[in-house]
Amino acid sequence: MSDLNHQLEQLHQEAAVALERATTTSETESWYHDYLGRKGKMTAILRGLGQLSAEERPLVGKRANQIKVELEAALQARQAAIAQEEMQRALSAEGIDVTMPGRRPLVGKLHPTNQAIREIVDILVQMGFQVFDSPEVETDDYNFGLLNFPPDHPAREMQDTFFATTPGLVLRTHTSSGQIHAMRKYAPEPIRVILPGKCFRNEDVTARAEMMFYQVEGLAIGRNITFSDLKGTLLNFANQMYGDGRQIRFRKSYFPFTEPSVEVDVDCVLCGGDGCRLCKYTGWLEILGAGMVHPVVLKNGGYDPAVFSGFAFGMGIERQAMNKRGVDDIRLFYSNDVRFLARA
Ligand code: PHE
Image 1 (cartoon, helix red, strand yellow):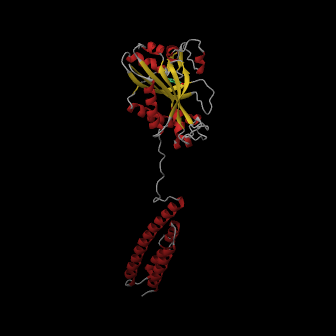
Image 2: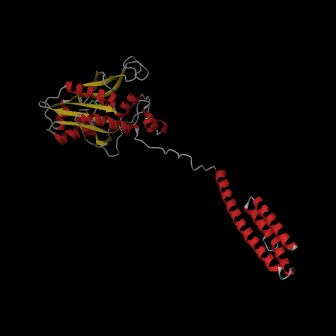
Image 3: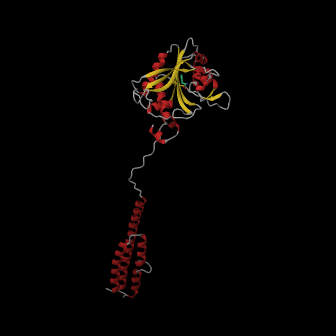
């Protein structure tokens, strides 16, 4: 066989080895240029076919075509393999590991104040109280006058008030303003209602006082309601809110709308009464103000004080949450620090 045939077989081998060495797409492209391209070695050999004899030409030509087809197929396979490798390299360079577990999404939760409202309302509702809604913007009368605060009695100064620009309207300073609404709606039927909601006081903001806070008012009116009922109700509440076996104590106090009036403490949930930082070494935590509804208030609400009596209590909601969770600064509730919000 001719020299050309020998060259052809050699070229085949050389080309096959060179293709295996190509590791990038651009290397395969120059490989194509070197062997199969217009100026490539294969083309050069094929050009030489014309010099062969008539017998040899078709045999060598056929073999040359076979090799060309083979090399083209090998090129395609090599390019596909390189593309795959290049993609793998790019993917690992980007650092995406699709087998890695996903990031846990942040889950929101109820604001600590809302948690406390729900907890307190649930306890009182299962004791038989009904939720009664009343406005946050009140008349001076509902917030003060009808609750037996005389116009210039110093008791008004107990509560620094935000006044609306409309004369006679205030932002309620306590939920007690809703007492008269509830009484006037139901008198002379007996009632047992609770009134949860926002209150506002124009006070310096400190660890113990915010300008906006929540209270829950309780009000029970009937024909035979006594101070013992108030005590039983509050002891029951304290046990459910702060744990079984709690003790409560009453301290005499003054509110214009109750007589007698008391402030109520629960034994410290942290030290059980021994004295600690949370209870300021008194052994007791203040939870609420309460008393028997004043006869003047009963009358203003539409009940005959000779026939009806009642008790009322009002508690700060953030205060309960603070007692329960050992929080010592009320400002945390409304400063949106997510560390506090997430913890509660
Ligand atoms: N309204 C009183 C306060 O804000 C609490 C209270 C309510 C006291 C009902 C007695 C009866 O301090």
